[in-house]
Amino acid sequence: MRHTIGSMRRTFLSVAAALGFLMSSSGTVVEAAPETIRYGGHERQTITVYGVPGAPAVVILHGGYWAEDADWSRTARWLAGQGFRVYETDYRLNTDARWPAQREDVRAALRWIGAHSAGRPLLLGSSAGGQLALDAATYGAGRDLVRGVVALSPVASPYRAWVDGGRPGATAQQRRLRQEAQRLVGCDPDRTGPRCWARWSDLAAHTHASGADDAPMLLIHSQRDFVPPAHSDELAAEERRLGHKDITVRTPKGASHGGALMERADKTVLSWLKRHS
Image (cartoon, rainbow, N blue to C red):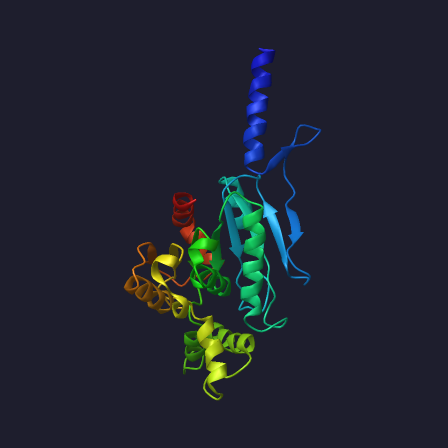
């Protein structure tokens, strides 16, 4: 009996460790503390790591209009519990630096993660973080850098968001998105010359679409999302025209955005991540 109990305890500890938990000296199960590392010199160039080494890697890129941080630790812990090694990644905001500094941060973080994980990572990006995730999937040969991308309410075309935010009847969120996109680029697309427009064009994922060279993508918007499905429909149409075979757009009912959409689509997201890991 003693041998059986010992074997059961070792099995339990193995499972607990895989889920990101540890056994305290008192015998209580506690969550393993996440580790934070720096991939650059700026205070926001950090990655918080959850889960056990060697598990398939998932990188989370938070939203927040490129202007503020958003806490995705709950989702990170949940994904770690589903068997992933999760890297919650911060980047410079539009008050810290203009585009393409955010691209440079994401690519630097992905290079660090790729060197310290089991192969190319998957990406999960929300809203403005979805724009960054899609940029990683399409800029250059995105498939060489990432295994696949799930983007929730992605601002796939910041110029489209700028236009929508200036329409009569635009919501407060759409007006804020317009303002922060302009701050990110540093110029008004309708009042300056070709150099400004080139920066706006560079932000759009469909500008860099190259078909088979790009990573698989799952794009999700609510039907009444303030970042509408048209953002992802435009990208998907261009990718399919160029021969991409693994890009899907989902539009569930409602108006959930970003993290709230994740709560509704968690099973769909998990299934896709596991299938592509």
